[in-house]
Length: 199
Image (cartoon, rainbow, N blue to C red; front, side):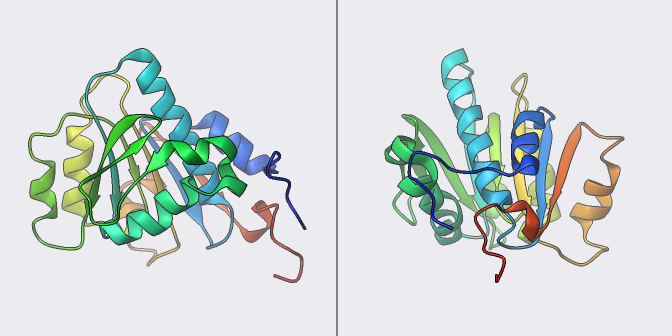
């Protein structure tokens, strides 16, 4: 299936997740290639634009296992014209740099692969966070990040691939969707409209 650069088809689940991600924590989980990253990144762009329009104070943060995975999994798709059209030119990041730019707003990039990662959050007042592959982030870092999201209306957007059923992210958060200010969407391959039947 070919896609016009002017029209990115979205599945019903992608559209519902973008429209419904109004909770403090918003999670896109499921199989690889299932369309969760595209939906979550589109929602992140909408959120960044809202923060800019509202003049919301505080920092925006992108979290990944390393800055290289942030470059590959977050910024590379954001810079893909086939996915985001003219908006692709509005995201800039040099792998390894402490920050990038999205829609003209500075966004801090934090890797979580070493023991010092949690200390990088100290002193940060966070207005919003995008967490790539959240099951690879340490629990202490995740809790510290949530604690730093003290700006009124701050939201987190995260993606996660399947992991151990006893993983802390699933047990402490995803399974408690009804108790917490959390919205989650579970994606299957059928939820990605650009995959072929053969795939």
